[in-house]
Amino acid sequence: MKTILLVGATGNLGELIARALLDKGVKLRLLVRSGSRAKLALDVAAVAEIVEDEVGACDGVDAVVSAIQGGPETIIDAQLRWLRAARAAGVRRFIPSSFSFNFFGLADGENFNSDWRREFARRADEERGAVEVVHVLNGCFLDTGVLFGFLGAINLDQNEAYLWGDGNHKMQFTTYADTAAYTAEVALTDAPLPREFCVAGASLTFHELVSETEAGLERPITVKTLGTLADLDAEIARRLQAEPSNVFAWLPLMYWRGMLNGKGQFESLMNTQYPAIHPVGVREYLKNMAAVNA
Ligand SMILES: NC(=O)c1ccc[n+]([C@@H]2O[C@H](COP(=O)([O-])OP(=O)(O)OC[C@H]3O[C@@H](n4cnc5c(N)ncnc54)[C@H](OP(=O)(O)O)[C@@H]3O)[C@@H](O)[C@H]2O)c1
Figure 1 (cartoon, rainbow, N blue to C red):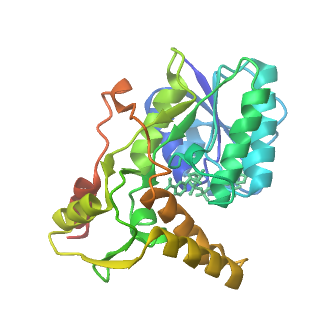
Figure 2 (spheres, protein in one colour; figure 1 turned 135 degrees about the vertical axis):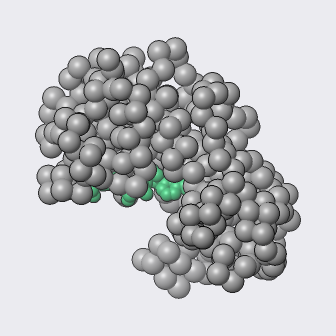
C-alpha cells in the first residue's frame, strides 16, 4: 500500500483529491496547518493520518501532492520547502499545486498566479534531485464557481458569453472532480511520467463552448463581443492601474486572456493514460446540474 502526503486537504480541490486517493486504497497522510484541522471533512479526517508538523511529514512517503492556494510565499517558498523535504526523504514524485491551463506558455506579468507557478517549476527543476516533479494541468475548472463564475466568461443568469478577439483558439476544461481523479492516478503510477501531465474533459473554441453551453442548458446564449485581444490587454492594464489591490477586478480577465489568445492551450492531452476515467464535458456537466436542480 502506498503512502501519500497531501497538503491542502481542507481546500476545494484538496478534499476531492483526498477522497480520490482514499478510493484507491492508499495510506493517506494530511499535512494541515495548526488551527485548520477542524475544516477537514469528517469522513476524511476519520481515516487519514493528520500531521501539523512539516518535520518528518515526508518520511515513508511515496508521493507528495500539493493542492494549496496562495501567494508566492506559499506557491514558491512553501512548496520548495516541501520539495526539499521530499527529496531528503527519498520521495518518488511531487505533484505541485499547478492545476491550471498551460502557464508555461505565458510570459511574465501576463498572469501573476501563473508567474509564481512557473517560478516554482523553474526552481523545482533545479532542486528536485531524484524526485519526479509532475505538474497536473487541467485547463479551466468547468464547474459553476469557475468557468461559470470567477472567470466572468459566461453568465448563466444573463444567458450571455463575453468574447475578446476571434475566439478561435482551443481552450481546455475539466471538472474539479475529474482533476482530482487524474491527480490520484498520477500520484500512484509506478512508471515515469512527463513533467507536464495535461488532461481535459473538453477542448473547445469559444464558439464551441457557447454551443455546448446552449446544448447543456437547452436555451440560447447571447455572445457579446467586447473588443480585440489588444483591447483586452488595455482593459486589464486599466483595471490594474485603477484597482491594483482588488484581484477580482483583473485576475479573472488575465485567465480569460490566456485562454482566448491560445497561449494557455495544451499541445496534446494525456487522458488515455487512465482510460478508466471518463471526464465530463461542458454539455454533460450542465445537463447533470440541471437534473440535480430540477
Ligand atoms: N484551473 C482552474 O480553473 C482553477 C480554479 C481554481 C483553483 N485552481 C487551482 O487549484 C488549486 C487548489 O485551489 P482551491 O480552490 O482548491 O484552493 P482553496 O479551496 O482555497 O484551498 C486552499 C488550501 O491551501 C491550504 N494552504 C494555503 N496556504 C497553505 C500553507 N502555507 N500551508 C499549508 N496549507 C496551505 C489551505 O489550508 P487552510 O485550511 O489552512 O487555509 C487550503 O487547504 C490551486 O493551485 C488553484 O490555483 C485552479
